[in-house]
Length: 164
Image (cartoon, rainbow, N blue to C red; front, side, top):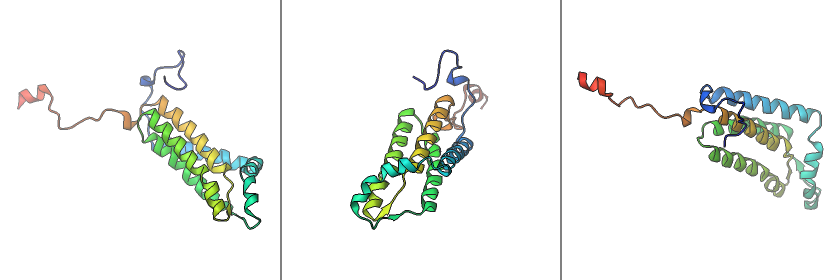
């Protein structure tokens, strides 16, 4: 089953070949613009408060992780996940990669809490979810270079073998 395909849409094989770098740039930039814009509007504050509420039991000495560090991690993840997903063949591998990166990023919360840092996880996690969705759909709609059969230059065709 191909994601987002219906009988009114063209088959996957009729689409132009997919690329890795341009879609990675567009997907990462779109994810960053959306997540940073929503953060500027204060949309993630309630989600961050809910996610970090349990850290109040660890004491009052929790330091907030600087916003620039969270933004730097978000930028890194926004471009890394689509690049890895579009460089990997097979949908199940992309899905495992996407889920693994999202869960590993969510696992930062208790690790940093034990170190005395209060981490606001909404921006990086939502960025991973959104860029993963976009990369997964793009990969389903375009044949990627890692999925195309390799053309070997050492193969001698029968017509040219007779000429030798």
